[in-house]
Length: 43
Image (cartoon, rainbow, N blue to C red; front, top):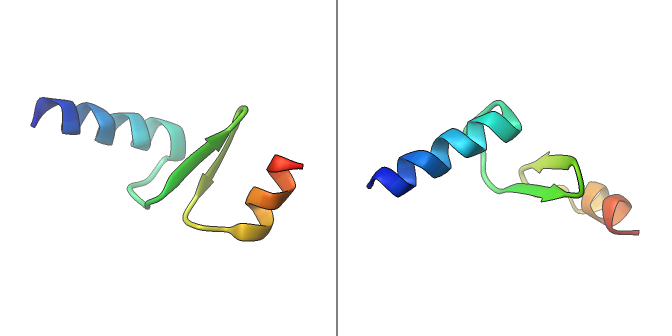
């Protein structure tokens, strides 16, 4: 349970919210599934 709480806090720090998924590519964080943004960051 404590480990889950740590991950919740990590997600809030990275994204500022509780939305999922939270995907970090390099230093960019994408909240929610955004295919066009993910494609942009992966190219």
